[in-house]
Amino acid sequence: MPFREDALRFATQGYAWLPDRRRALQRRTVHTRLGGMQALGLVGADAARFFYDERHVQRSGAIPEPVVATLFGKGAVHSLDGEAHRVRKAMFVQLLMDGGTAELVERARIAWDDAVKAWSRQREIVLFEESAKVLTRAVTGWAGVPLPEDDVEGFSRDLQTLVDGFATAGPAHWRARRARGRREAALSSVVELVRAGSLTARPGLVLEIVAAHRDSQGELLDPRVAAVELLNVIRPTVAISWFLAFSGHALIRWPEHRSRLAAGDPAFAEAWAHEVRRFYPFAPFVGGKAPREVEWDGERVPEGAMVLLDLYGQNHDPAVWGDPYVFRPGRFLTDDGAVREIGAYELVPQGAGDPRTGHRCPGEQITVAVLAALAVRLAQLDAEIPEQDLSIPLHRIPAKPRSGVVLRVHGSD
Image 1: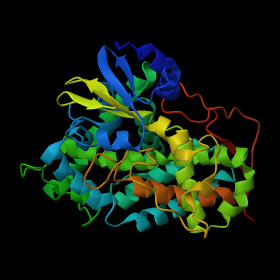
Image 2: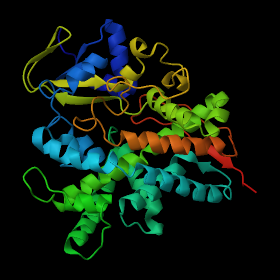
Image 3: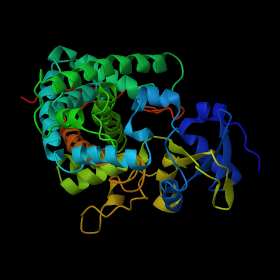
Image 4: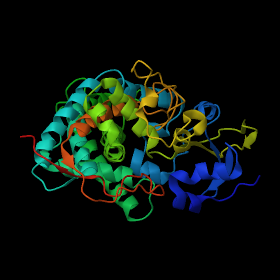
């Protein structure tokens, strides 16, 4: 079957593009072409295992330049393979999986509670924007990155811009490039000050570890690359604001869950976080290149062709979830109310596989913990919901409710 150019369809359909293509062809594996490059779209747990095996698919050189220049940054861990990836990834595992999560969660709770006092004095707030500021304060303090109070809003806005512009042509994309250049320059100067001894970085915090990290050749990271990796800790944490906006959307659409979430049961809060990440659109797919000719599902993948793993499609796959378009946090709980074990290739909003060794985001554990904690705070919030446009356009990547979820927060006296 010939490959067809689908760039325009992807631009107009967004998250629905690969699922719709599969339904139209009644196949789980589909041929396509993006920007003139041959590609094969895959879905399913077995497909994810195939995709994350570096013998079949490699990430080096596969991420489009516009995505590198906005979302990830040039020289980032996401673009590496082999030993270089293993060494750099070990740093992220140390930072994001081997401790410190509880402190970040507590900082996020404190920043949220402080913000609520200010929200109650405003006529209305936009949950998406305000939660991004909360997360910016929390993660920079946790990481040891100096941030003056008068730059919190600006830094928060720049971090949102990096995510908002990575898959969008036009002004949003160029704003993202400018924001990245601005923040990389500032953070690379911070790294140089730490290395020169002019700025003290507390041992064990993100800033100190990234500034001292050595690559697979035993060399310190270039200050600009170190800045890129600092942003790759800070940016995804602030991107939890997308999931908090979706949580607000879910509480409005399905208010029957509010009291259980507000009660603060840790298991239900975690199940809520998993279901928000499964149900709502975040990353549409991930891509890599075939290092040699390989075969999947009876289809030949030529050397150098793109391979796309449909994350949104898998999170809405009836073969995996049964009723994928029903929002039901209880699907992640056992009969006795505990969080059930989730397969490494089952729930894939931020990729699949082992986050310690593969390309799956090692910050996923932090995302779940922070989202669960702040979703409880959100459910406890005494607020009115004014009339607004809560539609979520699936052609726009990344998607979010059009209004950002507007709230009128009441005081707690």
